[in-house]
Image 1 (cartoon, rainbow, N blue to C red):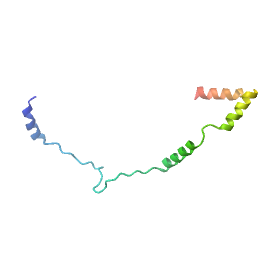
Image 2: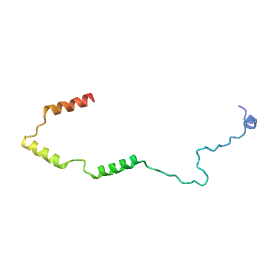
Image 3: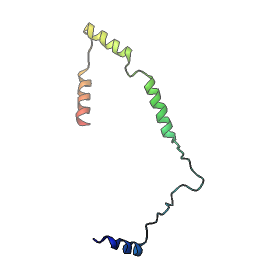
Image 4: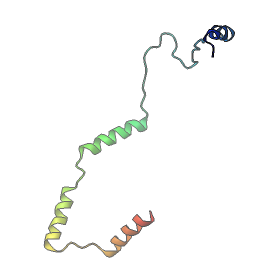
Length: 90
C-alpha cells in the first residue's frame, strides 16, 4: 500500500463527519432522570420487609426439637411420597 495515496482517497470520500443521533439530549437538557415502576416499588418494599424478619421460625424449630428428643416426631409416609414425587416430576 502506498502511503501517499491516502490523501487522494481522503479527497474522494471526504473526512468523516459525526452525525448527531435523533435520540440525543435536546439543548438545555443535561440531567438524567429515573422513574421506578409501581411493581418495582412494591418489590423493594417486600424485599425490605423480608430482610427485616427472621428466616427461621424459632417456635417451630423448638417444637420439632422437643418432639425429636421425646421420640414423638412423626412424618406421614404420604407427605414424604408427595414431596419426593414433586421433586422428581417437577
